[in-house]
Image (cartoon, rainbow, N blue to C red; front, side, top):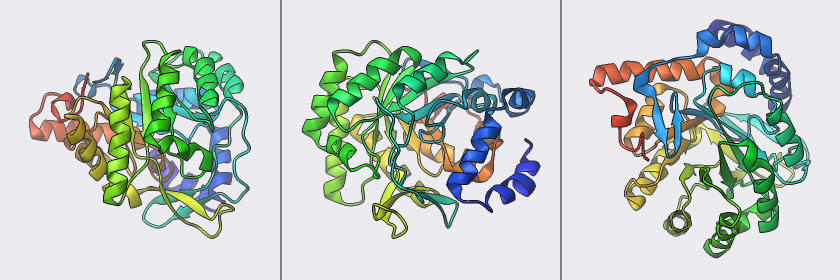
Length: 346
């Protein structure tokens, strides 16, 4: 699907439906593997200058898919054909969850989205089965997992770790009250201690919430410190911003996209400074272009993750982003993206 086809035909048609309906339609299209393989060369950008090392992962480019787009690991072939360096799939829980009642997703001004999904997914057994059917991987697969108790996290980790190149612990979804207990430093420490007993050498990431007050800042940076002490390999910053939403069954929703871009940059910089640049950071929140990604890299990010940008910009967003990064590198006379602060952190 070329940029013009998406911009002038597919996107207007999809935006006539509700966001969750549009996502369902897109999911069915993304399952058509042969269609996407014909576009692979169009969307794939290969250039040594944008290769990065994200901890132990060697990636063709620093652009990853954020968790939430492919909850049940059903669209991997198509998504890799779009040129992503890695995919964060899920969030998956040990057992199936229905999530919160509909409606639970809305479009928001300034290229943003609202959701109060509540982690709907088919469970770890189904996710593992879907991944095992994948014919070939064209990048790294990170599985986002969550739960309401330590035991749920551990069961999900044990089930999915063999199928993943890394695991991301989602402790920061604003739409599932029970998950937020892990934003307590002591509880997170217990969780990471439990995961440590069953983990192997594969990367372990933690996705943190945004913060807006000094006390919240201290608390979240405290969580990052707990992660460092427990040998977590990377931080994903940030999850959606929790705001009041009367249309939601829970009264709140998570805001993503351009509305949280500046908050994401601020928090990435805070984490980079607090960790001395020794912990890879995946910048997640409002990335739409190479310029957006460049700003995140300058402030300490090691990779960027895209979700809302894919919805608004379409399948060419990754290729456009990578090409813009290459042009910017050329203009800046840098040899690779790894020369930017944070990119290529080992």
